[in-house]
Length: 127
Image 1: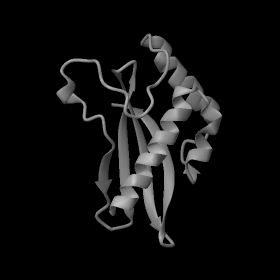
Image 2: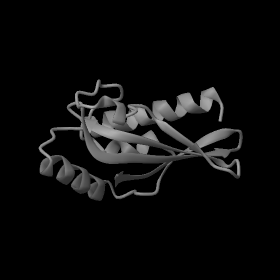
Image 3: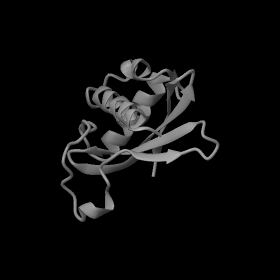
Image 4: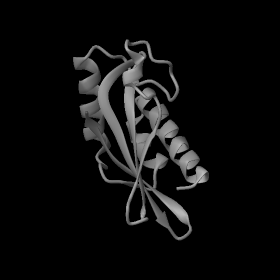
């Protein structure tokens, strides 16, 4: 994985987090090349339900400082996992709201394809 690939992955995460923060779930497909979880109404219901149940207003944008203690438990960065077969890599990002962990993880895949990188929205999954 090159630095350019990492930067593209981080830019993709930033775009998704911006759509989530603004609660513009219908914009999620425009942030990636493919959606494995493509029912944006189901995404809206799941995410809004999680926010409501836990008393959160909205997900944070990328880079919002953490306010919880101890902070060392949260890396506040995109975590990368390269595939052993060299086909690409996965990326996880732990979502926060108001600087607190929501215990949901954004999961993406990035596949090397035709000299580029195919960006795939996999899911938002409980930890």
